[in-house]
Image 1 (cartoon, one colour):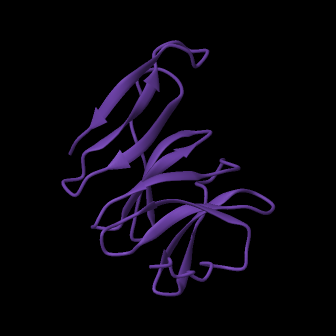
Image 2 (tube, rainbow, N blue to C red):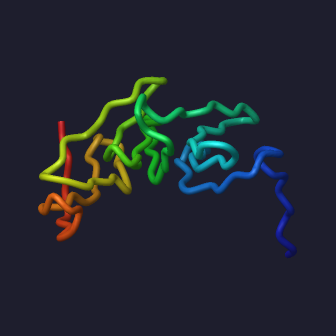
Image 3 (cartoon, one colour):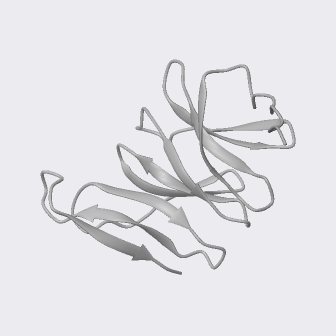
Length: 124
C-alpha cells in the first residue's frame, strides 16, 4: 500500500519538531527572527520569543498542548499563549520534552560560561 502524500502545514519555511497524540504540532518558523508555532487542524498559532529574546526553539508538546523548548534566555514552558521561563542551575538551560503530567526534561549548565550540562527534571 502506497503512503498517502500529506499537504504541507503552511506555505512559510518551517520545521516540525513534535506532535501530540491529538494531532497538535509544534516547531520552528523561519524568516526574520526565528519563532515557534502551534498547528492544529489547519490553524497556525505563532509562539513569539519572550521580551529580550531573538529566537525561540520549541522541542516538545504533550496532550494538554503545553510546549517546551528554549531561547537564548533559557528554557520555557508555553501554555495557552502564556510563556513561563523555567529555573536554571547556573547558566544555559533548555527543555526537550514534556509528558501529560507536566514533567519536563532538559539540561542546565553548572558553569557561568554555559559548559558542563546536567540533566534536569522540572516538576510542579
